Amino acid sequence: MLNFAGKVALITGGGRGIGRAIGEVLAGQGADLALADRSLDYTEQTAAEISSVTGRKVIAVEADVANFNSANQMVEKVLAEFGKIDILVNNAGITRDKLIMRMEEADWDAVLSVNLKGAFNCSKAVVRSMMKQRYGRIVNISSVSGQAGQIGQANYSASKAGLIGLTKALARELASRTITVNAVAPGFVPTVLTSDLSDDLKDQMVKMTPLGRMAKPEEIAYTVAFLASDEAAYITGQVIAVDGGMFMM
Image: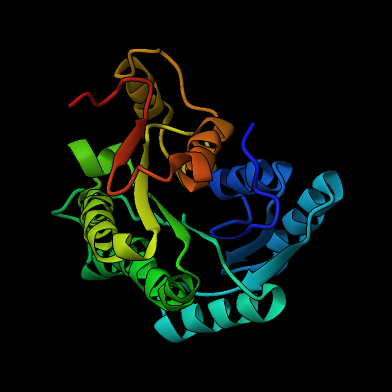
């Protein structure tokens, strides 16, 4: 079992879905948490529930990761509360799915701003403190759509592919300070983010998956936990697919 005692994790998009599952796993193994989201309505409840079950200190922080000042203020609040950040999970993401002939510029800009620029903003905001302590784990949540592409998701696929490039670049930049940077690329996971997909599309995604089912959020979370652990100290710049075999390189 992994041990995160004494570690502090900041998870963006941590109020629900995959972000919540990651928080539950990390706190369950000893980490204190900061769960960041644009809405505190459900994030505060999530923080209270995880804290109640695990006994760890869990706080909710309101932030818009697409805005650098907001992301920086988020990091400052977490540092003021805990004194350090050992783990950053860039999980916040949105979709605005449309075929490109119908996709508005605003749809493109919104998805790239949250999914890709948001990860840049949060990483930039947290990296100075990680460099000072000469330790850190950054895990970016990409997607199979960023590896293989997906019809109707030009914006989402581009943002998640860009996140893979960001992962590899930061891994090279930060390795000398004992900071690892990796990405997890989930396949289809039933969350609020995917709830608007049609049943036909969901059925197609399952048929494309060799294991023949959707992923459970905790299956993504356990992979993130491993990459965030000391046991994964020699892994950096990698993309770990958790997709039931959907995309095989």
